[in-house]
Image: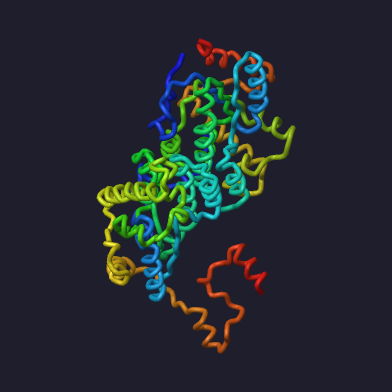
Length: 278
Length: 232
């Protein structure tokens, strides 16, 4: 055999949960899971702000956001081209890209990585679409286990009330309409999300996710999250940070030319609207 | 003769389990070995014989083809992501073109199958076990016709028609500036992987160093064999 590489370039175990690098990195991986409307994104956002205020280096990643893959996923959703297996595979591609280009480098560098949804989202959604569970665990064997996985558990009625969207606002795939559960989008959404709750219950058991009652007040939930996180991050690298407004203030400047780092880029439509109104 | 499609692992959702009438014939081999010429000739011959033929190949899915092409122009594309991207493209064609064609009694003639994807990922350091796991949703072909060539015979063929390609020279991961050296090393490793896969999956190996007619005749013999019983 012609040998091109001294060792395998990509490490993984036989199935998810057996990665040789589990627990080996200086950084910490904290992930949140839950159905739409569980409030998990709010919670991880609050957690990130708290960690940053303590001078911890954080990196944030969310489901479906790989710059290389997400356009294909979007095309598949908009044009309704995705089937259970292609839905599963394209999300695995997106996730693999983020693991390789973002999550693992940040963990090796010693950051606290915050992930809004992780492998469990794929395990729950794909299984609810009839994809083989054992196969999913083997496909995702390239993912390292998080230091902390929190599941925000919420009853269906509460999440639907929170999303507060009519039939028009619900997506075709978010409602599981591709599965033909019901022609009525809202009814289909209910059935599909109900299946996801069952999957999450089973995953909580299988992988020991920390469950938080997501019907509680936001602040109460956040206290619980921080109690879980605090001992994990006590030894993690901190840097002496200074915010841009602070630096500006110290220099006696107004900051007309500085874009706050948190501000996201305008979408094409917003930019056009701004240009035409200005 | 009708039978249900066999898969390498579990039967994936969306595959169906009704018996199928058609056949799945795959042509494999490294870049520049002459696959497309042979496939065009096979299609012409089979249609003249009265068979309905579907020809399909890499990166032709409606879903993922354009996305893969875009991604390959970037530079943070790791082998795992590319492999899963190819898997998406492959499944989309399997589910929406190949299986329906076979179900309706056509001959699906496929230019490169999972083996090319697996071979390319293996030389880039992706564990073989994981690749076999990922692609266990693939249908087992009725015949895999492997066009085998050594690198010494391959290089002049490629250079006769075009310049060396970035990906086909393994330039994405081998480094250095010697494209010729990279092409030799990369294609040698790739051919080794193909020969390994040929043993593992019982490919029919055809010596591609022969003339176009010699290779075509060898392929015709195999295809005729694979199509036996189709008219019954």
